[in-house]
Image (cartoon, rainbow, N blue to C red; front, side, top):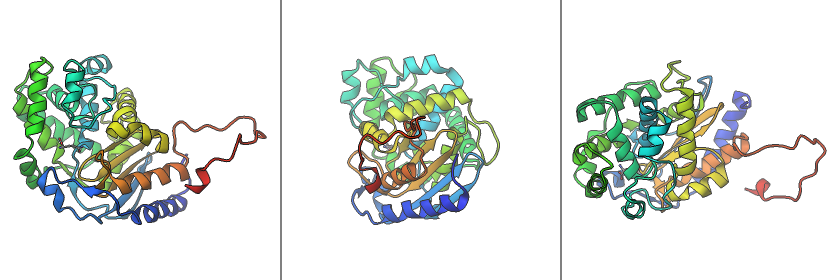
Length: 329
Ligand code: GLN
């Protein structure tokens, strides 16, 4: 259970203030247009599983969803094909390498490893229902719009900027093709993937999307079931292991919740059965994860008691083994 609304608002403000004092990290520039983002922009939003909204800062500033789309497209593909097929075709294990690693594919006999790195995401997009790239794209846009509860569209400037420069994703898709891991035209698949990454969202949208996964696949704002509870569960397991790429272990250790980052500065975090958190702040760490988003989310996880690994002894009188650094963080 979350605390009453005024307390959530207070903790949201404290999380925001703590993260706002951080100026480290750099705005992504390998997709040229992303370099133009305001490095100081910062929005933070919580949506609980009853649809209650708490927000602060630039929560209505639009940015491209980027890799966060991978989580939701994966959920749509799981819904279509089920647990076994996605486990076999895409996998669930962390590569321990960067999101756009080519070496990771080679080291694993052409297996894309997991849907949160580019190779696995491209393989997942290829699995979307539809015979043509246009049909796959329509299914992605409709599916992600159901997760947000509003009709989404593409930021055409971002799409064109990435489409003109994403030779690396072309190479990844060709490599997957060479291993027989995708059977569709690889450049067509990358084009759909690039479009899905350029979908325009804000921090509030991300919080609603996250809350939908937190609510067993039902969008708590619209009341629409988007995916099954089993699919939501499987998606969260994959996010816990891979959502922040090679930093997923540190993230889980500090925050204890499934999450997913994107290079435009978005971040979603899911507290199962409780709430979704969405944030936007474009300065990134070296793995491509929003610095302020991580700091704010860590504070919220601790102060709202969201860490899924936390438990209290049923022996009420048990003394702590030793004082931890928890109070000081
Ligand atoms: N569209 C980006 C890419 O393919 C997404 C990467 C990300 O957000 N980490 O490189």
